Length: 471
Image (cartoon, rainbow, N blue to C red):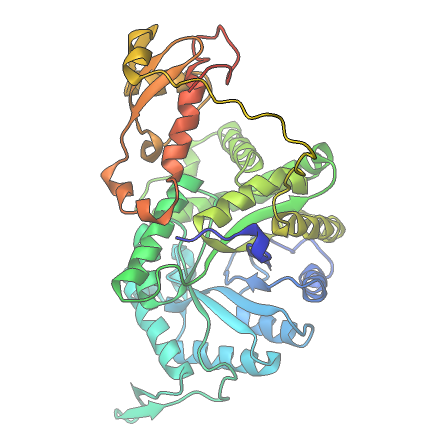
């Protein structure tokens, strides 16, 4: 996949996303409309609203197309995203019709991400579709796309006969920009690629290494059907709350995020059930659940969300764009106070500016110092012979984990290591699962990561500073 060059303009599109509850507010939709107007005037790419039923969390959004119709009259430039429409809960013809209305109201700005659904309680609207919901979703998406393109579909009528139907009003866009939503399935990523759709995901329960593998599956899906491998858009939803002072942001975000996650606990149990996993919250004490919530906040704050100062969050954005992410959907409404959310949007603009700027380069000196030839590099045999110890790869990673470095299985490339206090040498082996990606990078990220790990190896004995040795 192709990484985007910072010098070629903004490396990623920026959108806003909503999901939380507004039940405690007097004007439940004020934040949504105020944020949309701000995004529209400040050049953000779009806004995403979900479909949720029967719970306060997300309960403002039972019908995304209805809210998008209202937003269409409040904005002029913003792309309006239904993300996600749970297709098995609806007749696909109605989905296509409603989106066509929004497309006309907005001047051709509607997009949609489609999902199979996961909460068993939602399927009180269509209980017969739950067990086979993925197949129902894929068939529904194809029906929506066919109707949108102007083709008819044949459906049974009340007289028992088949009738050809088309949708009206005729959409302004010739094709509907389409995403598939995936919360944790590489198969859905690959299916999205093969269907020629974009994909919408998040970092709530996956890290960058896992996301990289799923994006690779998306590229494989596109390649398999003859589509450009580097085409399509991967959109990642990130919880977002930014400000100029990291300690102040943390103090504001942490209690709000804890309330948000505690309210989300029943949904987490339902999500686990939909994936065939057992999770019985009744077996956990209140302190157990709060400990899990605290752990999740710390995980997100440490680098899986846009929480903190704009400067702190630049590396995460750079990492995502390097993986091939084309859009970041900033979930902003988990913070209780609308005024704080809107204030934080100004810092989001600062983050956008930082990420769009080319890397700083040092000015060339007026007079260059004389160039001295570097000392001859020692031979590999010499390095091996003077090593103080030789470690197997498993031993090296166990020691690295104890020192605070955690590498996933796909990034454990060191098979053998020779080290001393000031130098280290390692044998690296790229797993077969990653070799197909070698041609996409000047140097594969897993190899670079392992080289840094070898550098750290010079300090594993604790008697010198990290990075002081020769690699």
